Image (cartoon, rainbow, N blue to C red; front, side, top):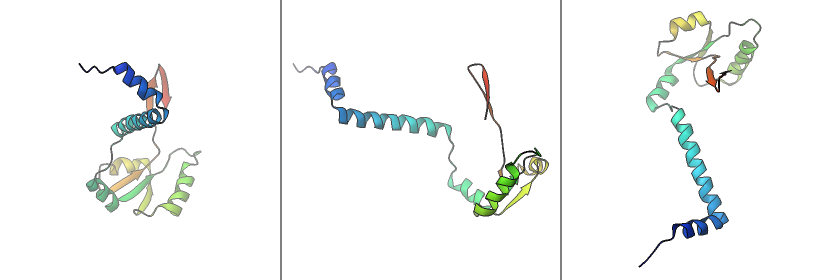
Length: 121
């Protein structure tokens, strides 16, 4: 009778350092990829085409003491070439946000409660 000793197989596998490291790294990569890809929705080709046809509207920060507006304007002028762009206020954003003719760049905040502590991002 042929008997497989699972403990012996696991011990042999675990003592082979190179193989164990390789398998462990592969499992960790796959687990990380699964978690990350589950949280991110990638754009499909239709959404990318719609974006490339849109005009990007940069929503300016309403805080007069923020350096966000100046920094963003400098970066947009220097680097943004993928779509035409313009700057708008939050009021204009509220009027245009449902149109497929526009894409938007804006400063946003998110809140999440972890262990009873409110975290803002």
